[in-house]
Length: 100
Image 1: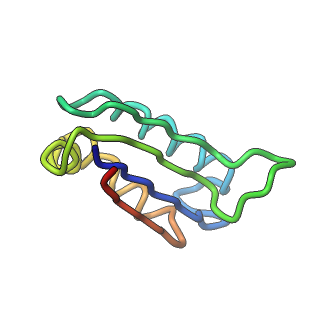
Image 2 (image 1 turned 120 degrees about the vertical axis):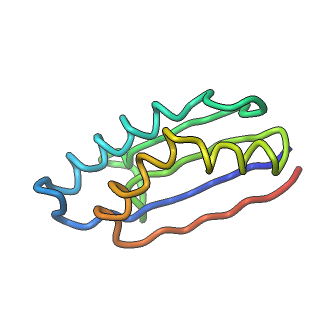
């Protein structure tokens, strides 16, 4: 099993919207990428919640059967379609993949 975790810090304003609106839109777009390839077992997108500690604005936690399944997800058209939007609104990105 391969776990894939990504965290994004968003710009204050981008693409005509503020950080909060872009976080919600980013979550909506990423949620559409759930269960798009065989071997994708878990896919959870979370927006930072007021009142709870968070140094990043959006987190993706996902699990894949193996590296091939993760690579298939990365190349999938739905995932590819969300990349330009995320690139335009993000200030920083952190990612970690690891096997368990």
